[in-house]
Image: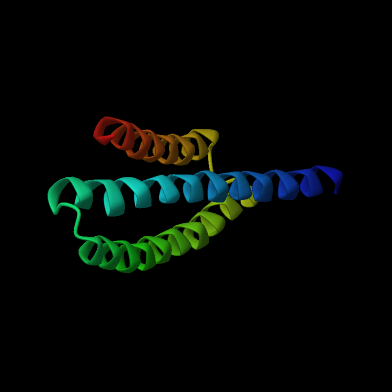
Length: 110
């Protein structure tokens, strides 16, 4: 019983950490993809930049929400013993890669 409780706490802690890391990546993606890139390509027209930012933020937010719900179901498979540690590592590595690309792109353009 104690081992099952520990596993539940572990699974949801991993899920919350994944959700936090992916939110951080989404915030940097918003800065890079929706603000920095349009400023570099479209120019300084504030109306176009604002429209791209507002619409893109809604789309990226919805994608993040779907990702968080899907990873919760994915991490719950760990409770049944069907999710190897390598799969969890791949999720965190993908999130870290997206974060690194967004942050590196922001630094590159600024």
